[in-house]
Image (cartoon, rainbow, N blue to C red):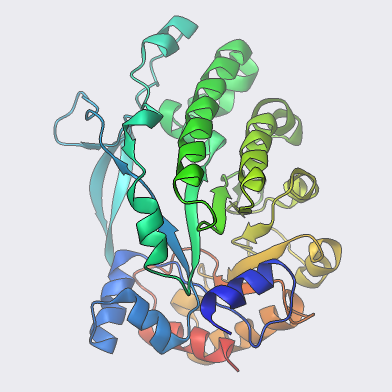
Amino acid sequence: MNPRERILNAINHRPVDRCPTDIWAVPEIWQKLKQHFQTEDELEIYDKLGIDGIVGLSPVYRGPAFQGPDPSLTYNEWGWGMRRTAYPGGIYEEQVYFPLASAETIKDLEKFPWPDPAQYDYCGIAEKARQVPNRARMCGYTAIFYYHNNLRGLELSLMDPVLRPEFTRVLLQKISDIFNEYHRRCFESAPGLIDLTQVTDDFGSQNGLLISPRLFDEFYRPHMQRAIDLAHSFGIQVFHHDDGDCRKLLPRLVEMGVNVLNPIQWRCGDWDLKDLKTRFGAQLCFHGGVDNQATLPFGKPEDVAREVRWIKETLGSDGTGLILAPCHNIQAITPLENILALYHAAQE
């Protein structure tokens, strides 16, 4: 069974020859792994660690650059202004400019230079997919709430649905329309070559949701459903990333047609992984699970191995429906021996 077959079998709840695995990690960790294995080829590291992995595909933006007010920042086509910020052990791109933070009216939204889906080069997606025939391939990233956060700033975006409902509906519709056309073009450019797409967001916090289920249903769910339905119409599975304690939304996400749930940050809230498998294991494939708040950065290799076995015994109790991985990016302070222990234990 090759890595792609193993990943897709787990998603479709079919038998696998062993538990499939994936990796998310910050650049400093990739550099550490490249030095350890004496290679610059990330797929070679996948093979050495027995990582099946999911390869990301995306078009290249060819449109005009966003003209932001601070030339020292880096801007993407949506106008998010990023600054490189050093922390102990690593450097992160922190967003410090939110391009619609001062918008007050629907006219302000109409004047904003929204990115045009026609200004991306979709031609290379199919070729990139053909270069990795034995790996699962993911293309696309729909995240309505997250883009609302990053266009307006977190505080304003949390207040918008309550204080400015009509403004919010227009804003979210514009985001959704761009996503829909962008992803339609992505999927049409590589028919049959894309296995997964993200319809994702970060509704969970360390303890509970950032917004109420009622606001989710009224403002964000219809746009997410639109993206899920588009993916399924192309035969593409839906991968949903949701940080933190998002448990109250899980019945809704299952109803909406999510296929893969990531990252299972079980230290956020009080998750019962055995119950999670019992209630949702027939509909969802679980991706992630290995804690990166305490176990990976601060535990010992034997702690990591013990946790891997526990996750396999709970979320993978029926021998499928689990892609074992860190529950988010492995952070720069994580010891190399803990990373090796994760993937060695996964293959036991």
